Length: 132
Image (cartoon, rainbow, N blue to C red; front, side):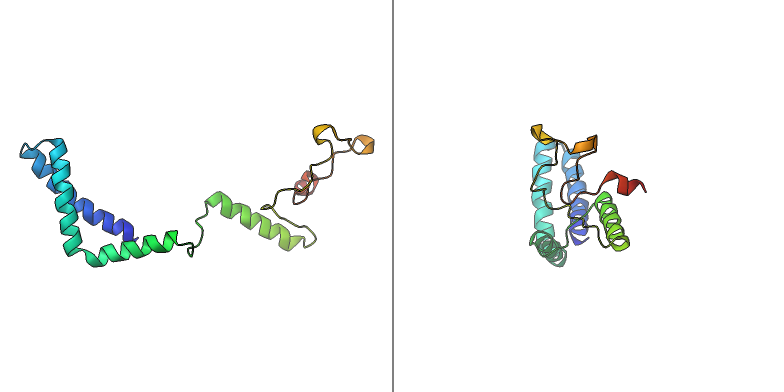
């Protein structure tokens, strides 16, 4: 939030300066340059606390100490896995690891006798289990 607040302060300084310079007939490119330089100086001199807070927030976000940002889909998947594991303690869910062996039937391997489906790879849940 501190980063967004500091961004809004700088934008609130930059935009009026840009409009003033543009209306004075300086030209679009020079208006941007002059407004950016003045906005930088003003924010550097007068908004030190906000700048330091924004810097600290960015440092925490990219230092590796911050919690990972997860999407709603990832959170829903994690909740589903947790509830499945709690309801059935004998089921192992390891979605982070890749299977070490290929399922039967992949790349010309023989399928199990009787025409049944191949066994799921390590860490996968059989479809029949999810349907019940």
